[in-house]
Image (tube, rainbow, N blue to C red; front, side, top):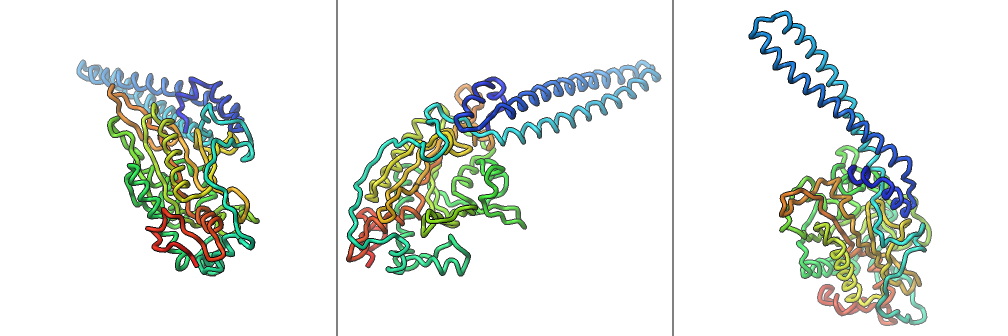
Length: 423
């Protein structure tokens, strides 16, 4: 979340920048400033009353030593009154601070100055494109038909076992999943990321730390009995490794990668755009996360985008990179680039990765800080990216590489699959 200090010192700027995210911050920012003033004035009252109580307590001891029992008794009665006053002020302070926190978590991250204006995905800017558009043979079909023809993915069996959005991968389909996971992890470790294997469930504090709570609880599967959440992305447990951690500046950047299954309720999703692998409730993804110095986070963002580009290039997929507009960028992100690959049989672009800089927004929630050379504490910047999400990558690979003889496997994947064709 935004720091209270930044909001109170840059009130007009905050309201103006939030407007780029189509968020009207006038009322909530004004209330935050008013509550902060109330918090400060109440704290002064607590401090003054506490100081008076301390002085009076010392005076009582002197009065007893001087044999002034009556005056000492009166002073003791006064301390009882002061303690009640302090308790009242403390209660007011606690209530005010809670109201402030409740408001602060409702305020989105500020968009970077380079975020374009816009309300919808159609307003995103295409940064660059690459790859060769495939020419399919007559009779080419979408991936859900290919999955059935070659017995790669059983969507109906997944419905039987769990419900829609939980496919069962079989044979070479399962092998392709495993190959992609290992391919992405090997590339990440070669790029300097330390592989970790995180839990697939997290507590509420972890969801709060990365901004899924209280903003997106409706999109997460909740285990009520234990009050745990199935992770929507490995970003959540991996970034929370550094919750309540103080780092040294020379430890930055920290680079982690993780494979996980991901679980998303995708409430309200329906229609042709969710057919097959286009939108699932459970899917596999390899994530990259960096904890970085604030001065270097945008340089790091560019590096992460360039890294993901190498992955789609190795997979021989046509791709494009989008700079998300204010209306399409996430609640917690300051700047996001989406990767899309072209799905030839569906004749549409499919999002396969998002790479984002959250600046200090997550770090403030996580209380993840570093100690600089000057010994002062600063909030780190956090970044993450999908590198990559498998379902739509698989959809594009199957569709774009289909031939009358079978489905060709990109050269870079053959060492991982152990076969060159699906036939």
